[in-house]
Length: 130
Length: 367
Image 1 (cartoon, each protein chain N blue to C red):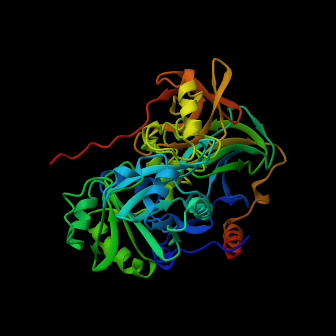
Image 2: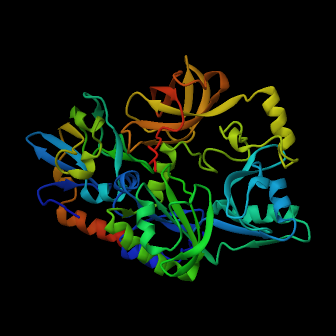
Image 3: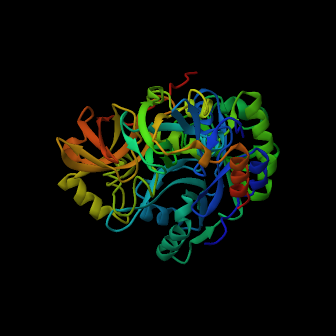
């Protein structure tokens, strides 16, 4: 399970990478592995306003449908259009080509409130121990 | 919630790093390497499945054949010893109780391989109709079942058995040895590929699995789980009992009219099916293919010109085709391939078409 140090995480297994005032969002290596082969990703319209924790889309395997949750509030400025024809990018490269949305993070929101890599790792281990 | 039952090969699956799924009360392997990879391995080469959750019911006695003929819709009288057939158990209303493969192992001996979720109900139903001279034995706990599927299946099996595989036709059964173990070998499957199913005493399963898996891997194949089994059967257009058909649907509606022999002796459900055939089937299970990405799921509404005409029963992204496909019951008038429809997935209405089943048909090897 890869958990890059420079990213921030949610307990729902999304990651966030800050680039200036914008945050790129995807799902973690652990999440893609648990889902199995991703066959469809539904993403919001560019321009959508999201509040922190709001469901912004779904990721589906042939067996399951899972909601995606916004790590922080903000406005969607881009979505990964490549996932329409190649949803398997989420499995192949969850932290790179498998990214999902880019958010203009709302004022007052801070990535510092999310889990860091060590805290996320501990969260996953605790979930697995259940 | 009771603990899920474990098949005899549970430890072997765990050692292979399987992801498990609970299915009909059994903890079965969902996948090992990944559903898509396993699916494609079966289409291109071969895969080995543990399907020990399936139920096995044996009927023995002078009227075992007559009982089978009375309870199933296909014509058991056609079966010689060593023949098998796909068939259906119906209720008196013509609804599907279960689908199964019946094999004639002896003059007065028939073996039914049934769905795991229905085994107990099937046994009770059969016993209810059995006369005193038929023994109805539930052998599900003592037997295990493996499925070796794919174009390379025969080549994988050849070095492991003395049986004359090349002359073994689809839907025939042989009592033989594989890897030195006594098995019932049948040329059957649920993937749309050539292949075999290997039924054996549960205690023999680890040895059989090991020998077959080594042979499969040498040939370039993979162990495969229930995830791939589901996507393979759907591409092959094979309905799944309990998902695509149940007591509220008839075999005629499910597109299984070819299985139903209305002109054989009377059988449970016949009158209802004769009446339905005469009146015309009101809805049909059809293939649908979406024009845009989106996974049709059981229960999604199907519309034509904005009017609801049916419901999805299964759907996947087809690993072979790369498109999104499903099975759906639609009004008979809309069951013609090419009919434009929409599928309601959450808040979207996706354009789709009715298409011919199966979605995938294997190229048969000649000679």
